[in-house]
Image (cartoon, rainbow, N blue to C red):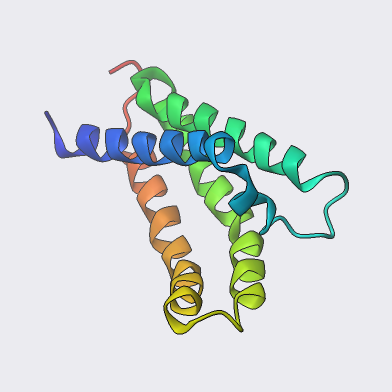
Length: 126
């Protein structure tokens, strides 16, 4: 199996797993929804979970991989404000939790770059 296929499958699995987690343990995601968004945090948690599952599924299918990977890059970028909110909200938590929240911030860039690499490597119809 080519490395690009393995990378796409891993990215797909990451997104689908994260999407499922939005339904299995929604409270942790509700807590990082920016309050400036209209409506219920749970609605945003479920919408982002469905989006992650759909984007992960698109990456899993070779025919839609390029579009799915581009959507993943956009999704990772769009979710950055939630990670900023989490880091801010956790500023008074114990050091390991605070460090984990802060570590999420620079991890967004490699996720975006990973998605863009999968997009470049994806072949329509392969």
